[in-house]
Length: 222
Image (cartoon, rainbow, N blue to C red; front, top):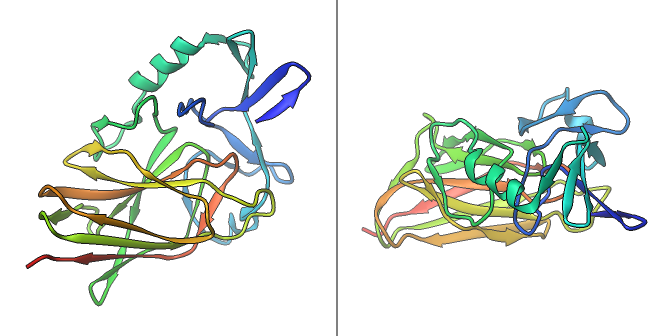
């Protein structure tokens, strides 16, 4: 959040409390735009760790004005997040209060010796990336099974701590996440109820977050 005198300039896609309201980002040095997560390739690798700019909202006396001059009250912004679930085939309901992703991207993993490898990806603020198995499906897990996802971010040239949220989707419902701001980390979950599970990553930073290959391990409680 950047202060301009008595005005607060807020990028679209940032959390207002925990509200996310859309996003359009671009880099300061190139016309290339990233509006949703992308697999890292030679065409976007130069964006890793760079500062991004984008549409914004200005808060003035309780009224939010976007870069197109349209005014919103806080309640109107909340309504936008409640009713604006991006089209997707995996998530039907979100239990993270007052949060709606700017986009939902499926991140298909590659299985190697029972370990699921997620590819390198660059994400934008407010975006949600859902890990799937090699066929685009979720994982059928039972109570007592355990999950471990190990990740590593590329270092940012802009911010020291890149806020990222990791959580799970069970039978179409997205449940609250855990926050990770370190460069490397592990997400661990013990399954309490049987069902079909996916695992998701949310970019909760003001700029892009680029991730190296990650590893998802599932341990069955036989």
